[in-house]
Structures are given as structure tokens and as C-alpha cells.
Image (cartoon, rainbow, N blue to C red):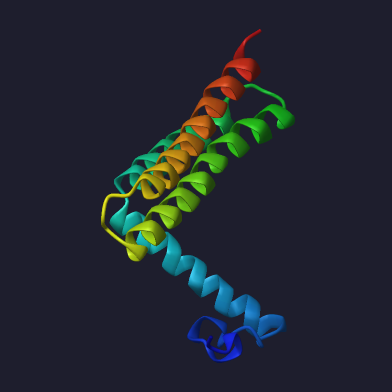
Length: 129
């Protein structure tokens, strides 16, 4: 077995403080860029967020209502990013059809569905009189 401390993925584990935060920021931006470039669903959900977040800010609801509405939309983006990471990892392991690969991808998709349903529920509950 290989020594995990010599593995390429652990080369930045020793970074601390602002250097670690700085590196993490750029890795995150690379992740956003990759998701936007490669994932149709992420682009669609970003478009949805660009419509719904300003709408939530301008609707006559309480601050808590606005926070819940915006949080629900951001949750969709977070879950979609995780789902895309799962799909990329499964495809990296093998593009061969396998029941476990299908299960992983289907469960990730179900998580996105739950997050989208959450948007509908939260927005409905906040906006209903």
C-alpha cells in the first residue's frame, strides 16, 4: 500500500492559516468554473438563482422569510455541486454500466430533487398569507 502522505492529493494538507484559505478559495473557484462549464443542470439552477434571489430581496416579506427563501435556493446549488462531484467520481472510476454506479447517480439526483422541492415548499409557505 502506498504512503498516503506522499500522495498528490495530500500535498497541500500542511498548509495553514491564510495560505490555506487562499488556496481553498481558488480551488472553489475552479470547482464553480468546472461545474458551470460541464454541467447543464448547474447552469440552469444558477439561472434560476439569478432570478429568485433578487426576487426574494424585493418581495414584501420579513427578513427571516427572505433568508429562508434565499437559503433554499442556495441549497439547490450546493446539492447540485455535490451531485456533480459524485457523478464525476463515479465516471472516473469506470464508465462501464454498473448497478452501484447507477445507484450513486440516482441517489445524487434524488438529493437535488429534494432540494428543489424544498424551494417550492419554502417559497409557498413564506408567500402564502
